[in-house]
Length: 189
Image (cartoon, rainbow, N blue to C red; front, top):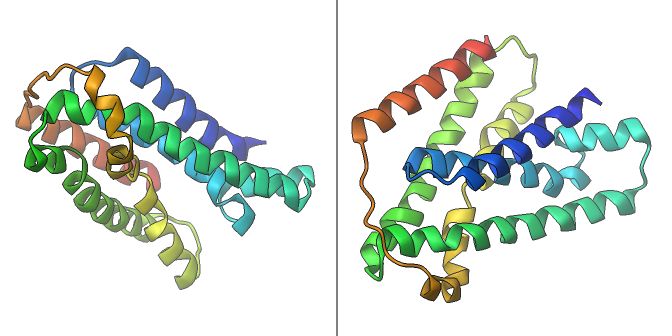
């Protein structure tokens, strides 16, 4: 049951952080990425991968439960995008270029960076994995940030949101990101 800790922590920490809603970009992305990480565990359950698949195996649940978990995960992905959608309008307004800068480019660049970091974490850890497993771990986080471009699906929610120009603290954001990467490397070794 220890395997359930990862998905549960991801979901709870993300939900709690998103409810607090500070106006810090790193905080917002962290909270939604945490939620998405939790729901993505459910999506991959039928493939026999991830902590949720370990829980299913330990409890001896049938295949149909795994499919239900996958469906719940997909619904969770859309729900996460639905909740993120107003942030696009809030911080980017009606300017298409600013919207892409808020939700598309961070997803694309962030997903590539997360995959590279996952491969680094696997490389420095003591875990014994086959090359196929290392690649799977490396690409597993690609879906974690998909809530952002999926937010464009829910543009209808934008009409109820007032624009609040985003003010970023580049140095503070970089410090937080470097700290997160450093901690992840430290706990991986």
